[in-house]
Figure 1 (cartoon, rainbow, N blue to C red):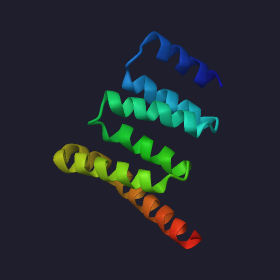
Figure 2 (cartoon, helix red, strand yellow; figure 1 turned 30 degrees about the vertical axis):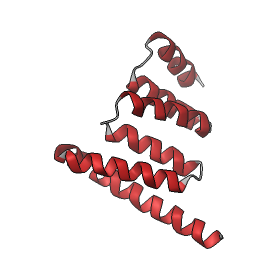
Figure 3 (cartoon, rainbow, N blue to C red; figure 1 turned 180 degrees about the vertical axis):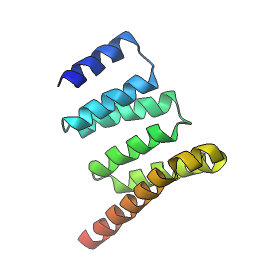
Amino acid sequence: EEALGLAMRAVRLVPDNPDIEDTMASALIGIGRDADALTHAERAVSLRPDDAGLRFREVEILLALGRHERAAAKLSRAGSLLDRKPAARELHHQSYEELRHAVQQASARAREDM
């Protein structure tokens, strides 16, 4: 709760900062407010669209919300970004592969439930 209060204050003091929006998303995830976290994660990505780490947070939240198709689309965009930036690909390769696997599992479970 304290982290959330600090993050909310930072958002008010420094609007349009993707790092603060990401921190806000993280604080909201920590207290189970994933839908609210998604709003801040999307804002962070809109402010810094070439940041794979911000995009990965958005994908994680979408998966937590059960929106696997949208998560897959967002992860595909992040993968395209990494393909254009070799240094970023090396840095984020493991995170990308873990999320790719999680998206595949979520998609398979959704097919089984049909």
